[in-house]
Structures are given as structure tokens and as C-alpha cells.
Length: 148
Length: 216
Image (tube, rainbow over all chains, first blue to last red; front, side, top):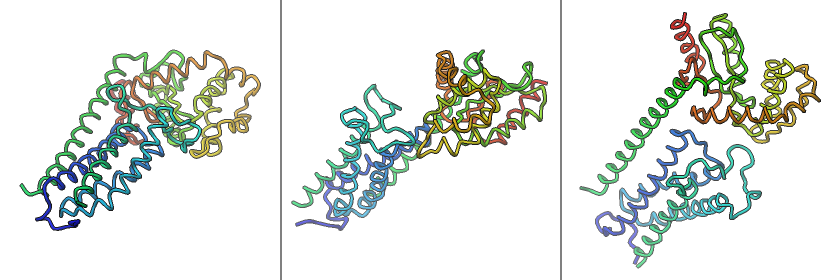
């Protein structure tokens, strides 16, 4: 029996899952804004597609969080999954697993520019992939719990 | 604590961390840039750098430019105007930060033109023809060759000179210096070693005015 809304009935573990997902999305959003607007690294075309998926998640998950509505999973999961796919594609390009000549970025900033690698391996595309993986995983867990 | 309290609290904390981080980062960057420029004058002005204005001028505007950058092109009249405002007191030193696609080739052509004594004319032609060869969506640096005759150049000699490894080394040196000084956007200005912190022509004018007052 899926419970869709009502604040009082929501069991704490579900809320915590959603909260974690929102936290990851928010930290990733602020982090990406820090890279572009504070450190001045220009986002490439693929970065923008990931941002299109990531930024709304902060508001969508946040809204679902305030008046706990587990149905938010239905709306958030497509966004997170789309972002995850682009992030995966970006990382494969970045690591050279996919050939560069099929990348869509011709003008502007190349998507394989090595701007930053934290701790020697944590590149910007990898951070994005990890963030989307975490959000998708948390949302899938949440979906399983509420559909039980 | 209610749940929405937690959400609001965490949001505020994260945004605050962002703002504090941004301020600290900018401040550290500014300090590093300023102190490096002051302590290592050679990084800022190299022997090979093209200059405009009196050699003994006490105020030096160092401009890191890219022939493909629109803002550099728009700024050029302002900089020339500053030199004209303080004749003999201010000079311009050109450094390169070729960030646009194909811009390093453009700098090589510019340096080759210098050997024919047509440096400023060539830079002018590059700026004027930017819409043709430096289009952001489809840069076609080779189109510059249609416009170069306007600068009165010997094109055969120009092509030979542009391939000179000495010019490639000069460009590499400038790019290394630009990186060391934290020049990530063009034009990047330093006036007597002081970086132009807030970008704008009024800010540049104020910085130059202050240096002229301090030096003369």
C-alpha cells in the first residue's frame, strides 16, 4: 500500500533517505557553482546538461522534504537518471574509453579539459557521476520502501 | 527539532559555507597574484615583450591579451587613450594569454609581423576581422590570411617567420607566466605589478591614475 503524503505518518527512515538525496544534490549544486562562478572554470556543454538535471533536484527534493511526500520519487527519479546517464557518458569521454571524435562539444570548452583533479583522481565529471549515483541509489531505496 | 527546521538550517549552513569559501578563495587568489607580480618582476615583463610608449616611463601597464578575445578588442582604444593622457609617463607592455581556439597561431603571426615592423597594424587588423575568424561557434583562424594584406605585410616571409621555433618558445613562456600569475581571463591587466582586481575601464583608469600620482 503506497503512502503518498501526510507528514505525520511518514516513517523516519524514508524521510532520512530523501533528506540525504537532497543533501547530495544541494552540495553538488553549490560545488558546481563554486567551480564556475568563484574559481572561474567555464562549464563545458556536457556539464551544462548535467546541471539541467541537477539544479532542479534541489528544489524538487526539497519540496518533497518539507511536507513529506514520498511521491516525489516519481518526479525526481527521471531527472536524476537523465543526469546520471550524461555524467556516465562524460566520464567515459574523460577517461578516453569513448573516442573523442564523437563528443558533441566542438566550440567553446572541450569536455575533456583536465581542469581539476582533487586527490589526484577526483575529476569534475567523476564527482558529478558519484553525486548522481548516490541520488539515484537513495531514490531507488526510497521507492522500494514506500512500495512495500 | 522539526524536520523542516533541519532542512532550513542545513540550507543556511551550506549557503554560508559557500559564501565564506568564496570570499576566502578570492582573497587568497588576490594575495597570491599580487605578491607574485611584485616579487618577480621578470614574470610580469619579459625581455621579449612588445611595448608601446616611452621606454623610460615609470608606469607600466602590462596587458595579457588574446587576439581572438572581443573584450581585448573593445579595450584597445581605452588603453591607447590612457597612454595619450599621460604622454611619456605610461607605457604598455603586451603579453599573451591565447585562450581562444587557434589563438596561439594568431600570436605567432603577430610576432612574425613584428619582424616586419608591422606589429600594431597587424594587431589592429586581427581585432577588426575578429567576427570572421574568431566566431565562437565556428572559429576559423585560417581566414585571417584574407585580411593580413591590409597590414602591409610580406605574406611569404610572414608564413616562414610564424613557424620559427623561437616564436613558439616565446608563446609558451608567456602562457606559463600567465598561469603563474593566475591570468585566466583576457584581457588581464597589471599596473606596476598591481593586478586590476575589479574589471572595467574606469577601474583601469583609476589604477593608472594612482600609479602616475605615486611615481611622478
